[in-house]
Length: 201
Image (cartoon, rainbow, N blue to C red; front, top):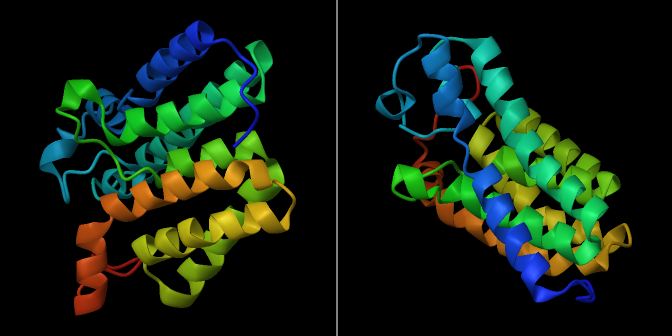
């Protein structure tokens, strides 16, 4: 964890604003604007890019991926620019929590992979690039998106330590644990051999 240098009132405001930014459900917004229906009644009901892709619209899925990752990155960059590294990590965590547990959706949000990657890219781009590459390699090998997410989340802390960003490891462990928690149904399907593969309906 970084040394806490920012005052608690500023950190509290940062946490609230980052949570609000992170909890914007871009998947729902995009699918409604594009006339694709209520995302929560499509596929798995998840609000992330993978489920948006099940609407059949690749542009909608790409936009959701970009915006979900972008909101995590923006929260980090704004907090770092205004207050410093400690606020940046807090903003990243709170934006991540906002995406996973948005208050106005009954605390039932996305699984956090895109937001997780955006946060890592903004905090330390070498770590973010390494984790993205890990996801891509795992996806190419196993052809299962959720398994690639789990592998990349598990190795993110290792990459941070190896690349010299040890102050990020605690934050990464917290977020990776939450990624695993939100993927518990996927883990059960992976174990049962019923998890859909990339490119298959």
